[in-house]
Length: 174
Length: 96
Image (cartoon, rainbow over all chains, first blue to last red):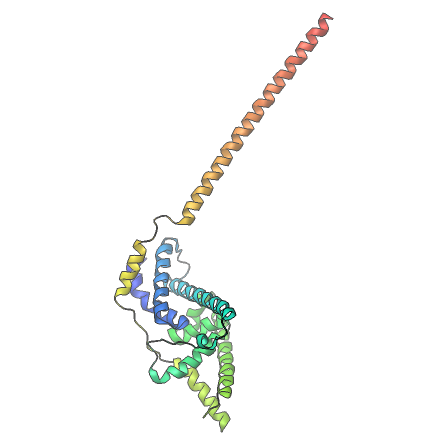
């Protein structure tokens, strides 16, 4: 098995990109990536090799990202009770270094729509779009069959189309 | 015409995340992780809790065994006493 340092240098950027895909914030994604590798370090001895080490690391990254998203949305809900000015806080602050400026507006709209997807669809779609993973690879991370992932991706696309249609109809196309 | 624009816009937006460049971490990332690892406690809380639980279980087991032993000793003494008393009672009846 690979040493921890080797794992770190081999997978750190994959983990970082996965985390940015979910949290859309560089600082949070970096902190999250550190947490992922600390977890990898702690649990390396108990890793039984039932899946590829890459899949295991991705799974930790996805779970940590989802935990943070859940924590943030709980916090948002709490704040919403105490303050009525929710609009500003709900505005998505997109900081993805890989997205070119001319695509930033569209990407922000898409990310906002992705946030409204059910969790499994969101995970599958994000891993496919941003990490370029195949349905088989996503299936291994989510512990699902590739056909089930394909159906998740199909439903995610349908839901996104619906969401974007509503958005553009509301915001009137020029 | 408007519907065509709408579909086109949706497709363009859906494709806005295609070919996104991969972000790379700075060189200090490894150092930060190493620092955090260095500050990790050597023994985790769960490990300590497991140790305490095992110790408590062992103590309960020892107490149980001791209790059982003392109870059986008590029964033996009681049996001895009652047989002794019976013997004495029989003695008295003989005198009478």
